[in-house]
Image 1 (cartoon, rainbow, N blue to C red):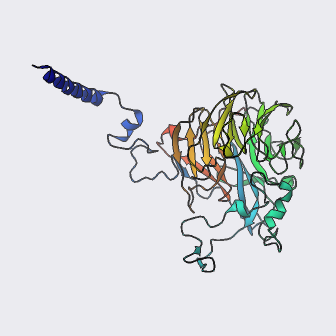
Image 2 (image 1 turned 120 degrees about the vertical axis):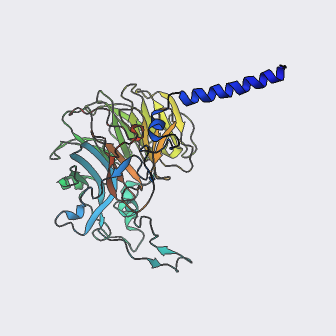
Image 3 (image 1 turned 90 degrees about the horizontal axis):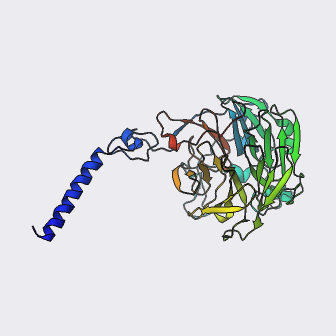
Length: 438
């Protein structure tokens, strides 16, 4: 046998052995469950005809009851959905920017005065942007909260009126697992101007409720029943960047010692750290060149924050620069990863007990799961005008049973998603890291 024949025989033997080993090798759990030819990305292995519109979840339709069901509020529905927090499956806090007229979708209207072949609404798509119409204006980066109402009303003569186009009431509401309205914290509407996010510190057995208000430049701490305002951090209506001032703060996150970190913010360019009593400890971050910044510690629109409970590393959404910057708990830069899709506009960061990062991209309208180095693990979401689709997810929460809750600024709603039976657990948004009251 010559050398060429020997090499050829060796190749053939290697291929045969490889095939045999491959056939007898252990199969990945998902592939095993799905069958030989089933795609590995399906949220529920083996289901026929699915599209995974809501990923590994089914939306709980009719949750919550609409705010128009409250006696005397029949003419109003929810405004922009800013935040949501599930203290438990039976106690969920909903944060809205007031209310909008309780209208049904209008019939199709031709609009030749605007251009040929134009009509409104467009079939299958949402027909009203809650965040563009709800109170107040001046929502974007760099805008002045003091001019919020002026911008919302529009140029003279005003084309929007309070009490006609929008209403400021029922900003914070508590509902149960069936969506029944348990409490309406209307007594605090007067101190809210643009409430941005709501939380219960997971390490706090007293379950105090925190609300970040970016237009007030303040963070409020309430008793769990909402009867008392216990603390105000920041100086209301006065922007700044020191121990007692914020500049439009957005989100918060806690470490296991109940120190908390504030993303500060729309107009600020820093992270502020406080101890469990609200005493300022330190801050870090410099103003960068929006959309172009690559330097560590320079930020524009700090809009999302998460803390790894094991390493204490702080993950910061540098939104305008399309990246996640990572720091230690003293503000020392460690590393970063970029969002490669352009344009992108991440709204938030969430870390559950699997220590992965979930976020939402307002441009692609997708929920995104990344590992701590930025490798994409899973994505789902589609825009539409029916339950289960997503439009502008601005806040998320997960309860102890694994139900997912989202607040949508554009859609003007909150939704509850229940895990589908048999769903791949790697595709579910992880449960909370810890809850002191379990």
